[in-house]
Image 1 (cartoon, helix red, strand yellow):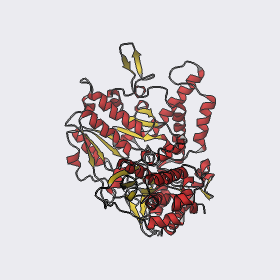
Image 2: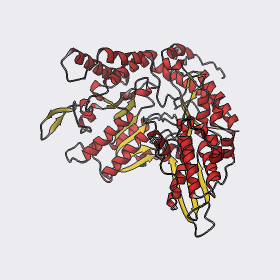
Image 3: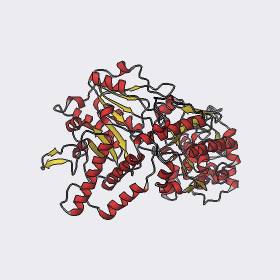
Image 4: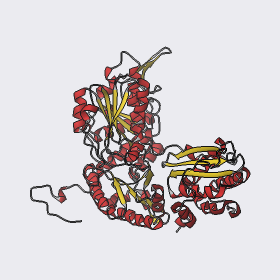
Length: 176
Length: 434
């Protein structure tokens, strides 16, 4: 059944057992902290992502939110992949994830870079769900910027990609 | 289902008007297609309905044979197009029993229709010589409800901001009914307009409006009913409803997108200042100023959606041919069947009335903790098309403490087998997210 490509075991596992969930204060009082709240107005999914950084390394990435399995699993995987990484590494991973999600299923993910994130390759074939997968990643980017650390410029390819990346800015659907 | 004998002298089962659902389904080409390898099970008619061949044919025929602009040409095609467009208006007027054809204003959709009324208030409020019923200022009140679609909330919020009027609303009960207990405090001499949904697009509730209408008349306010979800599904008679305005949209009633209707009492439409300015809505224009046409033209600036209006006329013919009373009854039976069937799904919670009384065939629910997006996705993999999300009624979701709901909605072509497919699909959802 094609549904399996969307709901990979890895995604369901992260959804049912999220890693690093819950907003945390920075352990080091000198840490720079940034936070961003993103919503997907189409479906009501919400996520708050908070980063703590010493200016180079993301010492913690915490989050809280509610939403579908894709959006919540994606946040869990984001936490796994980017916590403890420096800005340069995080940018590489972030770009790779955005590229994967913007690729309409045509991008082959690199497991060395994306880890469990490769499970989202199937999600990229469901345009309606791409914004769910990207929600926490876009919130993370904003949170990092607010903490003074730039990550991953806007997806630099075509219009479709940047449209997919504006996960928090979708217009509301279904006018009467 | 249990069968009970209806006592003699009471209306019998066979007295109810019926139609052949299989024959109706054969009129809708899209119902033959497959989705993800499964027969299409379309349970999203509250979002938009499908269109029968009879409507599609009229749409094509109009462009193929009668295409011209309306109300401005003396040539034959222009006359044919105008006759078709105005003929559609007459059909729609008859469909809702409007006392006059001129009370039917064509709009883009219900949203635009509500905005026309809201902006007429706005424009009247700027002119001292405007009809006082449409003048708003600080101290005046607009009353809506917590059950509204965003299209019947946001225009009034904006109007209140522009005029300094206050927006108030009816709450919703735990059972998903309009809470009328505070009616007399809510609708008062300060109220200028009450704008309510007739049938909720999310809870399915059909609001009984008689008490509210009576109170509205007592205080001298105006009443608008958003009939987007009722005109397609049950016989509507504007005289009987005793509203001042109703709005509805074509695409939810077997018509095309891009065409909707504002019905208003002729005397009120005539008292309303224009909203959009442009061609067709004028009486005369000089460089300094203009005077305006009588309704409905006053509110139809620019070239209207001609073919869409004509096709909506065909949709009305189609629905009338099947019979609105029969459609209403079909959906009532289907709703009763679906409520019973959904009650067998473990962990399923219905939002809104759980009995098939005072409700239409739109059922929103939660399935345990599974997010509606995930419910909808698994159902889609089985060909079952439902809507998920906040249904443009976020306050209703907030009222019931959820960010989103899953919604199944029925129409004249929906079958009990499709309800069964939904229930079977929900079992699959439970397996995936167990």
